[in-house]
Length: 453
Image (tube, rainbow, N blue to C red; front, side, top):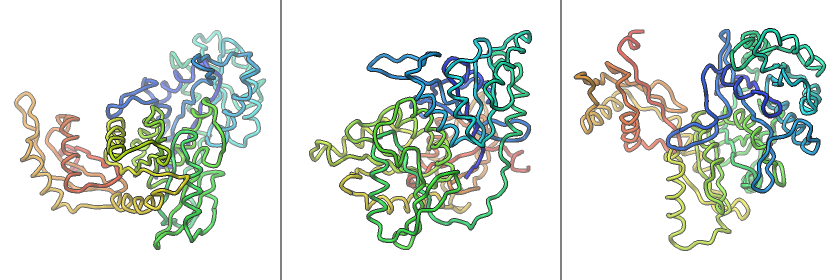
């Protein structure tokens, strides 16, 4: 799994965090994006500077919802300062490098001081980016922010890109070195339980552990301050990874939910299989789709769990109708098995680990070059590749180059002619023959020059 460092942007609203985020990742990444037909928030992206790769997390402005009215946090609204402290604490715990973004033109505000007060307690690198300093004449105003008592202050203009090179140099210098961990290889299947607040993550964890007879021990995970639960079932070791809010009780503030992406990313990058919990009473929400999109981005195995099924009013037609609706709203997770469970009563919870083992087996499945090429010829014969301007797309041969997830390379004459629709057709036919239950698969198309390289 990838262990790229997490760089989190924190700060009050309207200081330009999203603009700086887009500038650093090198492209304009909208707040919402279309992924496999589903619109979802996009809060993180990979970046690289000076040969060092890291993940940037745009935590978004702190917002408070009261009834139907949503308003951004005012600079001097003391009633919302607890939210600032909570969100800064989450970022402090889970990020490797923290960048506090401030408005260089407006000067230090009460909200800036609250964030800084929390960040001063951490042992992690903290950098201050004084944004919105479009004119070099204004850069001297950045020195005011040394009063926050954090790390070095950089005057930047996210809008024009001025000063961002120096900021990136500082970020790269602060990123922890990616040295191999000195630890015994863990061969257990690692499971992440994900879902929005109050969907039943804690209850499910407790039920899974309570029903298993052999619990090895709670051990410290490779992620800082996380506690993993290890258990054995039918001779197989499993590790249930601690996830955001998994041990917390009560309602979680809406603003805090935005910051949980930090923990979710770290969790997914250690996981083999993720359990995505859906509230059976409420159905699929936009946040469920957002989390599902993160799962496909990180290429982990996925199992969909419709929880609280015991309190859903139903008849003989409810379950198939409900599954159809879930599949329609999460089309990009069509490969994921779906279970209807009750974490509270234990209904079908015993099916989860069995399904996890099946998904992990599919993630490790490898096709021989011969059977893959036989299948490729059948696919092409059933639906020939497209032509463009008199040129025919030709497939030469295919090979599987990786597992977890299964990754296939197809050598062709013109890779740019492989349309998304034809790629989807190939994936569907591949899954018809080899289901690859619960795991995404990757199809890559290369030219003959790539083959020679």
